[in-house]
Each structure stands twice: as C-alpha cells, then as structure tokens.
Image (cartoon, rainbow, N blue to C red; front, side, top):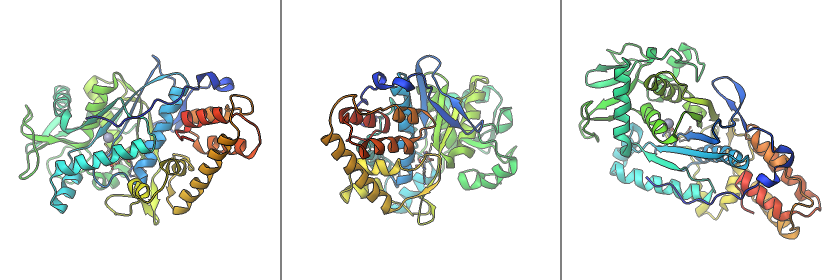
Length: 407
Ligand code: 5CA
Ligand code: ZN
C-alpha cells in the first residue's frame, strides 16, 4: 500500500548548538520512566499503530499521529535516520460491521477511508512512513508468524479458530504492568472473548479466525480464514522495521490488550528478544466530555474542519497545544487560539527576516527531544515573536523541522 507524499523537514543539525548532545528521551509505559532513545545503529525504528479505516480522520487519530511525528522529527533533527512503519487494519470486525450496517462493500469503505486519511496526514504535514502496510496484503507474513508460534508450542485451536497462549510468554504483562483483574475487566470491551468455552486462559487472544459465512477469508495452511487483530502488528512490525523496534506507539487505549499481545507474540516467535525498547502512548482526546470514539460517535473530523476553511497548520498547532500524554478535550476555542497564534508567528517571521542573529532556537529542539515537549517549544517561539529581534528565516526553519508547522 502506498503512503502519502511528504517533504523532508529542513535540516537543523547546524542550529542545535547547546542541545547538540541532548539525547531524544521519551516516556516508556513499560517502565514508567523516561528512556534514552538514541538508536544503537544510527537508525531509529518506529512502529505506530495505524487506523482501522472507517470514521477517519477524527481529531483523536490526528493528535496521535502528530505526536509521533514530533518523535520522528526529534530523531531527524538529532541527526538520526528513522525507519517508520505504520499499518492499516483493512480487515477486522469493526470495519466489516460498519460496512454491513451501511450496505457498503468492506473493501470500498476501507479504500475510501484510507484515501481520506492520507489526504489529512499530508495536509497536517505528518511525515510519511517508509512502509505503510495493510493487513490484506500481509496475510502470508501473518500466517508465517502463526506457524512460528505453533512451532514454539504457543498455539491451540478452539473449534477451527487458533489462539495464542499468553502463558507461553514469561514476560506477559510487562508492557501494561496491569494486574490480572485490570486485564480481565477490559479485555472483552477491547475485542477479547474471555468467556469463550474451550479457551485455556480467558486472556488468550485470537490469532486466526476460521471462515465465517459472508465474511472475507483467505486460503492458508492454517485453513481458510483471516487474521486476529494483534498478530497483524506483530508480523508487520517485524517484517518491515528491519530490526527490533525502538518505539511501539499508539493511543493509550492500545496499551492493553493490543500492545501487550503484539509484543508477547513477537517475543515468543523470535525466541525472547524484546519487541520494543519503549512503548509510547498518547492521551485520549475527548469531545463533549467523552473519549472521541467511533463507537460513541462523538467525533470531529480533520476533513470537516478543512472543508470549513480551517488552515491545516492551525489545526496542527491546536493539537500541539497540549502535552501528548495528557487526556484533553477538543473545543472550537482551541482552533481559534491556534489561528491567532499562527497569524502572529507568520507576521513576525515575515516582518523580521534574517538568519541566526536574534533567535536562539536552543529551547525548541531541546524541548522536542525531552518527551516531545511541544507546548514549551511553542512558547519559545511565542517569546521570540513577542520581542523585536530578527532571525525570522531561522525561526521558520526550526518551527518547520521540529514542530512541523509551516510559517
Ligand atoms: N487499527 C488499530 C490499531 S492496529 C486502531 O486502534 N485503529 S483506530 O482507528 O481505532 O485508532 C487509530 C489510532 O488512533 C490508534 O493509535 C488509537 O490509539 C488512536 N486513537 C483512537 N481514538 C483516539 C482518541 N480519542 N484520542 C487519541 N488517540 C486516539
Ligand atoms: Zn496495532
């Protein structure tokens, strides 16, 4: 599957100055601490869970991908290469249910929504992944990983469906650090089936769903069927990242079971090597007091705001006004404030052009490297704008490279 067009950020390695030696650090869910993410071999490997293509692109999705774009930019600004991989869950129950509800072909729905998402990502100046990979095109690598898990003794059947045995991974639970009670309380809500008779452990997750009448299925040595959810990210990450991940990312709603399971499955398949150095999670964006979610239907879309005339750079700036790990609520006021800020920034860089004199960009790249501290880096620009010094060309370069906002 192809990604969207994107322009490489301007280089700011020459501007780093005081921050040149600062490592990129980010908060890791698995350890609860900030970890140094300087890549061991010069290439950072980033996997971010992609959309299930219906009801895209709501502002919760957008906030999550913009946050990981800051990480991508922080690594690049520090002089590292980034191998960025993102999946598309282009076959799964919620997509099939939505297509059935609306009487639409599930593939048409997935294509249309993936196209819309690409357009929104491009407009928001999100750097494209090097590998943008759907599940439908990944069936062979998914089947291959399930075969490896079977060889490791981690797979069993319930009727014709195949399950991953969570007890096969001694480190199971180390991503979320949730108690078994916490896991049990939420598993069913997030696609699990704890009560199915015949399972060895209620938390075991589906690897391969045997063909159901009226649903898509593929021939395979496992029988005719389709992948379970978590195995797609295990298989796509391993096949396309080119090594163990530096970061497995997504919204905090993916901590359990999705990231717990995808890490466990990969670790068992490869014989123990840790799936990712860090598990990074964005906060949930709410609307009208509730998490913005496709199932609740309380959504605001990037495409609707764009169609209403909003500048995508202002939408991006509004998303960056919060720290990525906080839960927060979208309001129209945020966009108005971002519009006004963008206008001030643009006017200032136009009125006060020039190179390095007058602007010390150190605060911006430094903030970008320390747990993606977008709000302080924005404020560093506000400080320059409020003054009278020159250096606007340099401000423009830094703001583009680090925050991804074009002035
Ligand atoms: N396809 C799976 C991941 S493999 C999936 O979760 N798709 S999704 O379309 O539901 O979500 C896409 C991304 O947006 C995920 O990283 C998810 O955690 C994030 N996300 C969903 N809702 C919100 C929200 N309200 N706020 C912030 N991020 C969100
Ligand atoms: Zn995923």
